[in-house]
Image 1: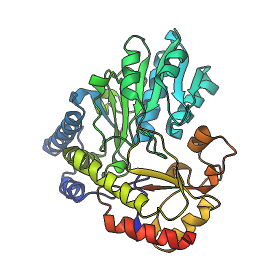
Image 2: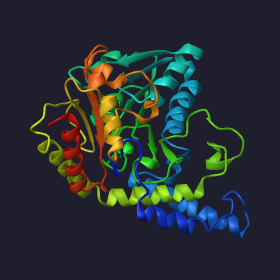
Image 3: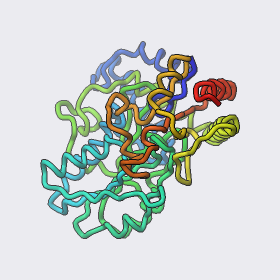
Image 4: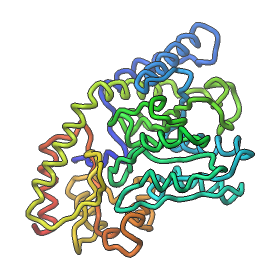
Length: 370
């Protein structure tokens, strides 16, 4: 089996597995005051420091969560509800993950917020369109760093610079970017940043939220964990694995990015003799390749590749079981575009080999009759 769906999830790295295995021996509750609890608290404190170091921030700005979805919901709903007396206008984009779009929709439907959804122009989200959408009652702007279906890198630094002159908070869904690109929220004017460990070779079910100030309504209530901002005993083993995986990825960012580009170039070089098009906008992250084949049904390609031992996808894993087409491709090309039925997503990681890409290309051409 060859795995090429890393935008959905990644395999645990050996370093993460090792650190998690060692952490399993530390079974104390980090909130307990006895020696077992203090030992666990020490691991938790070190993991928080490791994550903060990668982001060039302080430990107090890192909140551990169950993953990107919880981080997004905490930032969006928590901040908007606490500050609704200052305004009820939110700006986001049409190509966001559902973990952003649905919390915004929830606020609109149940709390009377108003949302402006920025549409892509020529495949890009333009800072000028966000600027034009800003109002005096805009309290939150939420924009992803990298699109999970196409690899498009959004202009979050420009948007952060724009918002320095506006009181709206800036939230970035960095789930597809963290571990692949350097992102420094304090330097880039980002108030909230969401990440999920299983996208960078950490375990599933854990993530973090960066917040320059813990100024939001709590999403989880109960105990006083996470400095009273997120109730529930911390998932210590997974948190340790996440911190290890993140630190390792950041140590090899340039090498891994270069490797991903080689994988993409190899893929496209091996497909030159068949008809295809790319669904991408520039700048783009080479870890994700969204490619379409005229007059070829993507669901059949997916099935045939799976039967031949290759794991790919047609879009976001969170909607893979649904019948509706990709909302990202709809926003880019319109609801009636054939691209919605012809496109597949191939996503790689630093663990993907050139040989695996060559084998994939060969089998794909056989299936397509190339």
